[in-house]
Image (cartoon, rainbow, N blue to C red):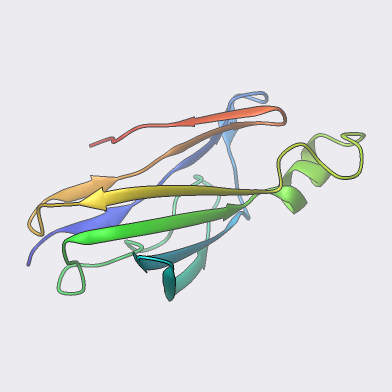
Length: 118
């Protein structure tokens, strides 16, 4: 297995990388979630290492949870309580254990999007 998983968080409202966002990765099987790793974005909005590196990557269902609430509080004050966005889950499937999966998050205080990047 030579595949691996990366992400990148961009603050589209401010036009810059989103630093300091905590991210958790879970392996999902039915209603069961098993936490595999937790990390934080750096100044470039990326993680310092792949979230799931080569050798630990396997086919299956995964879920990334981006804990964006604290970041949004610090960069977009006055959003109200509760915030419209706080924790953003992205569930995705992996079918090729030898591929690079890049799952970025484009974030703003009232919306987000994702895609399979390269």
